[in-house]
Length: 121
Image 1 (cartoon, helix red, strand yellow):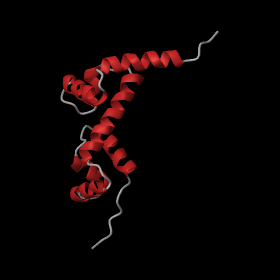
Image 2 (cartoon, rainbow, N blue to C red):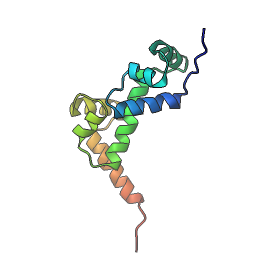
Image 3 (cartoon, one colour):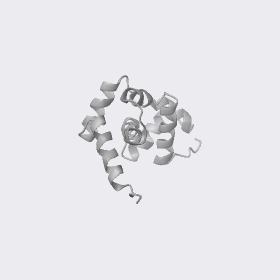
Image 4 (cartoon, rainbow, N blue to C red):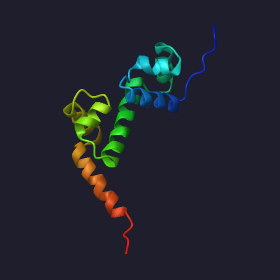
C-alpha cells in the first residue's frame, strides 16, 4: 500500500477556487487537481468534519461577497462565474445563507466602505 500525502483544507479550498475559475467545480475535478482519488478526498474531508459540497458552498459564498463589493459585475455574470445555472438560483442561495438579497448586500457593503474611507480635505 502506498502512502498518500493528504492535502490541507487550504489546498482543497485552492483547488475548488481554481476549478470554479475553469467552470468545473466538481468533486472529481477537485480530486484530480489534488492528485488523489475521489473516495480518498471524501474520507479525508469527512475526517476533518466537512465535505466537498460544504466547502464548495463556502467558497462560492466568499467569492460572491467579494465580487459583489469589489466589482460592478451584474448578478447574472457573478452567478455564471460561480457555477450557478442562473441569477435567481444564485440569489436564492445567497439569501438563504446571508439572510439578505445580493443587491442589498452590495449596497450595504458599498455604503459601509464609503463611510470608512478617509475624507480628503
